[in-house]
Length: 192
Image (cartoon, rainbow, N blue to C red; front, side):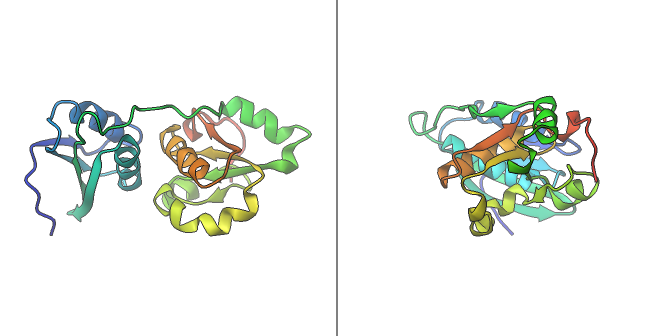
């Protein structure tokens, strides 16, 4: 069992992506550098989301513990000069734009990478999408290497996890990663 001296706790139980990260982002500003924020969530996707966000912002992600169906995340706030600004990923496309792309003449060159959790993927995904949950992305990069030069449309439920995934992919040489900014919640095309 992880034991940290937690300075502030926020409860995100019952919330789904992107709300745990949105609340975490706001709460971390309410504690001092060096203090620890505890985040309680029930969304399995929060395990990867909170870790990715904290790391990207320069905060120290201490870990996650699962207890009684809830995920307890711990983040130590970075010193004010140690945190990176929250930068939005530059290459984006809407679900409408993605549908046009998938139905257009270049559809054979389009690859959809779905970074939602397995149960979300199984409940409905874009035909032909590759499932790699955000929490597994860095470990599974070697299997994605054949797609290095392809345009990779990255999707999640709302655009938040996919944005984190695009940052990771770009850092590893996937310069054509494109965030589907509005996510599956706004997808009107066919699913399987």
